[in-house]
Image 1 (cartoon, helix red, strand yellow):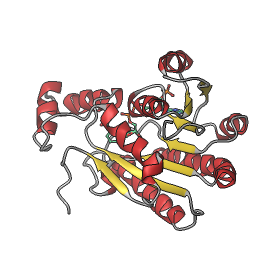
Image 2 (tube, rainbow, N blue to C red):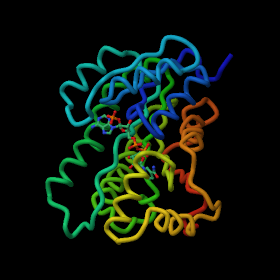
Image 3 (cartoon, protein in one colour):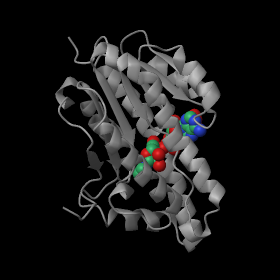
Length: 253
Ligand SMILES: NC(=O)c1ccc[n+]([C@@H]2O[C@H](COP(=O)([O-])OP(=O)(O)OC[C@H]3O[C@@H](n4cnc5c(N)ncnc54)[C@H](OP(=O)(O)O)[C@@H]3O)[C@@H](O)[C@H]2O)c1
């Protein structure tokens, strides 16, 4: 029997990148998966690719909480919640309008908080719950020129650590911190940085890789593997951690 059979996972940001790879990894472990994002065609393609049966999708915007929560109510019970969404746009914090910070708090912290509150009763009833937040290595070391993102990831980490002390036995919450991961998000950051610095995307790529002992980008599947492990029964005693999947880029112990 697969280790997640009988469990239902709600994977946010499942139409691309790390979220998509996570949906596949959880389905491979036997979970029934509901993928959530805004692009329906992408979600349909994902569900068609997932191994196993009973999978579905939810077209919802993590910025529209009223609609989001009404739709998530129809999914019960959810045993595994992956909080994952698009990162805020780049730029120095000194230039960030207050509205960008407010919007990022709304999309990241408030959406995750309300989704967690909506799913917790199901997890408690089942005696099994896993919440994994896809954040960033900026939780440990703020990244230059990602001012709003750095701020919001730290807020998410504080929120998750607090919950890790409140949740009932059998229900865990943890953060996965992706490093440079080969997704659409990274491609757009690369193009933005090259334009800003008047360099080429190849030069930006090389500069990034020079920081990574593994010498390459992560595949989304590698990040998803860490998420899936934390969701599995084998992750039962891991709570409130920040797990980097960064090829060794972070220098701190
Ligand atoms: N890739 C990296 O190198 C890297 C490094 C560190 C941290 N991260 C962080 O890890 C997370 C995932 O990264 P990724 O590279 O997989 O990103 P990605 O390729 O841009 O995918 C983002 C996903 O989030 C969904 N999404 C975005 N805004 C949404 C909204 N308002 N409502 C619902 N869904 C929304 C997108 O789907 P729709 O557009 O269909 O809604 C998509 O499925 C992001 O927060 C990113 O900043 C990534």
